[in-house]
Length: 108
Image (cartoon, rainbow, N blue to C red):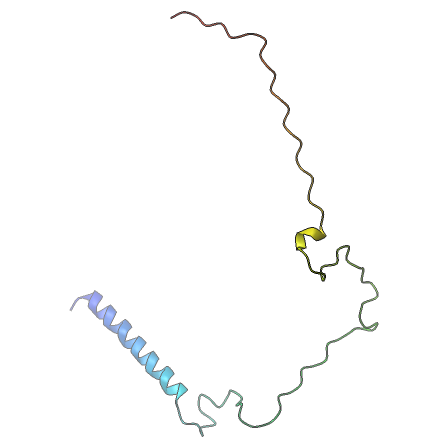
């Protein structure tokens, strides 16, 4: 057997073993608390999930004392681009000067 065939066979063997282990872990015994699935909290205990912590509002509450109002109000219907002025356009290029005479051509 060539080295390439051995490498492909070894790769196939590792993938088949890994897939078998993953299937075993997913459908393993339900009552095994100390197994692979025992470290993850279960959803079927019937208890309410813990409430998320209240956000920290700081000493002054909301809005913060140093907050400034935005110059653009973005909650009304309309386009976002209408809230800010368009940038200034570039000035036009100056016109090229018109030559006063035609260039002189030498006969060939």
